[in-house]
Amino acid sequence: MASKRKRNSVCASRSQYRIARTRTDLADEMISYDVPQVADNIPNSDLDVPNSLAIIDDISNVEPLHSVVDDSIDVEVHSDEFSLFSSDTESNNNVRDSSPESSTFNFPTTTNDHASENFQSHLACWAIKFNIPHVALNALLLLLKMFFDATLPSNARTLLDTPRQLHIKTIEPGQYFHIGIIKAVTKLLAKNNLAHLTPASGIKICVNIDGLPIEKSSSNQLWLILCNLQGNVNNVELIGVYQGFDKPKEPNIFLNDFVQEAIFLTNNGFTFNGKIFPFEIAAFVCDAPAKAFIKKTKGHAGYSSCTKCYTVGNFVENRVCFPQIANLKHRTNQEFRNKVDEDHHTGTTILESIPGLNMIAAFPLDYMHLICLGVMRKLLLMWVTGKPPTKLQHIKVQNISQALIKQRPFSPCEFARKPRSLSEVNRFKATEYRQFLLYTGPVILRSILSLDMYTNFLSLHIEAA
Image 1 (tube, rainbow, N blue to C red):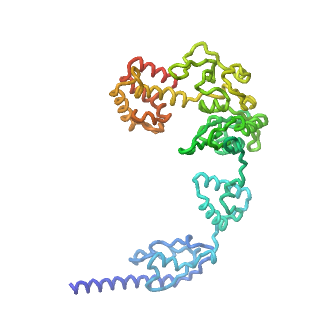
Image 2 (spheres, helix red, strand yellow):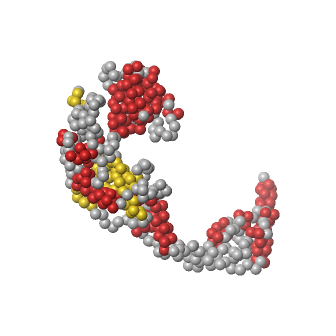
Image 3 (cartoon, rainbow, N blue to C red):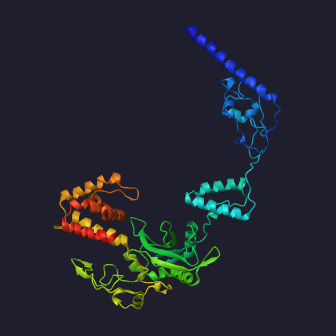
């Protein structure tokens, strides 16, 4: 056993000797070439040192020196017999130091002021798109200033044009900050393809005003004024934001800055890229409570609350309903401004001062709340938790739930949510009610509901489609 270990040791020593001898021969060959010094302006990363020079185990794999070393790259070689190419770290030390003190990086420099500003704007958009922290952006700006363009700002707040002061107004019982229609629409135009935009077509926007809670433990809330270009629902920008522990006490004060700017743009047009485009607010897209709030009309539970016709509601079973469907007289813009139906109004809204705004046609009905979260949700709740004869048998409810669950694997990506069991009907979102009404419901309910109930459901399905 001892003799075997001795033989292995001798073989290992001979193998190490051969490797060391091979490295020494290669070093002598490299030294024999007349290689100039490393240029100071070339960093380490520009040297293309092949992996075969890192550790050489077989001399047959070594290529001729002229095939692996570029004439334009200068290498300083040390001829240490055993440590010349022993590791990647040590081989890197053989190259002349290219620290900032002894070398400069040949980054392209910007000589055009317009190109520099264009780069800054693209860098700012990149930082916002990928949510780059300010600490990381500050470090990147320092590097770019050092090696690329000294005119770049040193701080992320300067690059992103963060305002130093915000002109916040006090609107009882909270505060309001107005960003502006011009800024919002300019951002929207910059994000979209403007091939279809002509002075003849003009700029039309849709405005959304709504409130949302920001805390669960208090009544702290925001009321936002948003807008998007008509026909483009994917990009939305903020016009103004209100924050308080209750909604604005006076909607006319809340909307004053927005309305004054809308009046100016409607009368004078919107200037973009040196051209003036006609400006128009095409629609106010709001749910029923927000629409009644900004128009100063009765809420949706009032007797004369309908925003489209003069029907008067009836109080039936602790709720106001509108059973009249024939011989309805539609409201008009002029009659609204003249307050022909005094019971419909609670005051005069400042929105009436916007030129050309149709106070009836420019306020469409809210499909999501009226149909999806309204009628469709009410039908499902009556079938699941209602009272006879509208309540379905437990076995039928289970059959509907099982059919919905079976459809989950086959639900295409166009649907935002997969079907769920009716046991979670109280947590359904509007898109789930819509999917059941327009797509899955007519198929599933055909063999479960009675003929009268199924016909009633199909009537809603056809009207909503």
